[in-house]
Amino acid sequence: MNYVALSAWPSGTQASDASGKRDGRKPFHRSMELTGRARAVYPAGVTRVSVGAVETGGENGPYSVYADLGEGAVVQDVDGNRYVDFHGNFSTLVHGHRHPGIAGAIHRQLERGTCFGNPTETDLDLAETIRDRIPAIERLRFLNSGTEAVMFAIKAARAATSRRKIAKLEGAFHGTYDWAEVSVRSTPANWGEDRPRSNPPYLGTPPSVCDDTIVLPFNDTERARKILQENGPDIACVLIDMLPCAAGMIPIEAGYLAMLQETAHKHGIVLISDEVVCFRLGYRGASATMGFDPDLVTLGKVVGGGLPIGVVGGRADLMNVFAPQDAAPVPQGGTFSANPLTMVAGRTALEALGEDEIRRIGELGDRLRLASEEIARRMGVPLSVQGAGSLFRFHAKANRPATFRETFADADHAAFLRSLHAAMLLRGIYVAAPFWGSVSTAMNEDHIDHFLATLRECLAELPAPGKS
Ligand code: PMP
Image 1 (tube, rainbow, N blue to C red):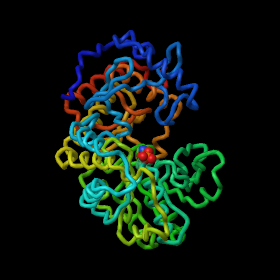
Image 2: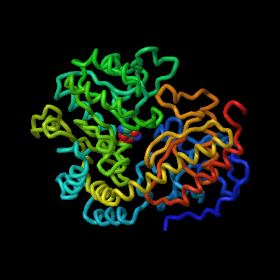
Image 3: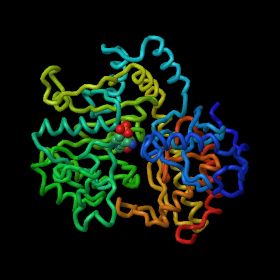
Image 4: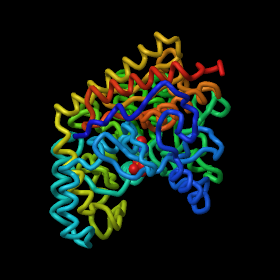
């Protein structure tokens, strides 16, 4: 049973106590100790930039909450505190922790071996499952991360079109392949007026990376069409995420998507649907749900069942750039690609993610988003929630932002979301910072009730943005 003992979390106390003592939780001594060790081995004391220290204040400064174990919807930290896990490793764990079917499949495979220099039947099983589910995928290749999936999709598009440039949406994150990273972190200081500027992702980015990346304004159909048309003959691909998390998790507008499709077809541009996160929105993935017909699709996260994975797939003729084996236009390999542990975990995860479960967690997500907004509205707190289905992202804004630029939070609003994140964590609700998450199939209405009750308590306590 995945249900968590809600009575373990007394409420109505200070959320800013780093020791965790005041709200009856166990102090974070072991997490603080491990954070100290981490500072001596990792830059900034963290091994993934996205899993930073929780800013709860306290005499020892920010610290990371170290996980010890997970079970169903719950994660337990090294000090014994338990949280309902709406983080799910950035929406990867669509079935929560240690789903019995997935854990069983991994155990059985462990007895047979973890990786081979041969193909195994397990990779065929997952490949067929994915191909049979996603209409745009006729052929595919397995990789180890979403970053690699996006990288190989872009390489495939370049090889197939003999063009260098790519187009992408402002603010959208697609992993860490240089071109895909352009203008992810644009701010009002550098995003440009009429046309989004191509901003370098890291210090020392070769200028050619930005020159070869065209950034489109998000959900602005006419301006994006104009930019695409001007550059059409030079563009290899348009990289699209239909629910781009870093850009605010604002659903893409149907008219905007239709424009991208029409303009791309007119100019022979390859359409890449990056479904690393948004695949979970529909049984056949996000593009099929939106009536969108991409040439290539990238997958990751949930299709690996909790183990590392990336997938690039699409039209057979395009995917042929990865053939023949010894002289392919785009060579593609990977020591751990298609490792059987990931393959059996992924296949079991997909089998357990049927239409009914997708609908059920989508409805739980709808309720979480709408009821959270209603609570905030009644309490006079400027808070809105974007997302779709089982995915949600909070904004410290009274009205839902409709474009990436509207999501931009000033210092007060950003600090408010960070405080809310920490306050929820101290009360046993874990989301990704600053504030986004997902509903897993290990959850039910009780978990949403608990989330909403906790949100109400935290909002009652925290000073509204600008009032601290
Ligand atoms: N594409 C999207 C839309 C993503 O959100 C991410 C990561 N969250 C990636 C690609 C990269 O995936 P990975 O972290 O597995 O490299």
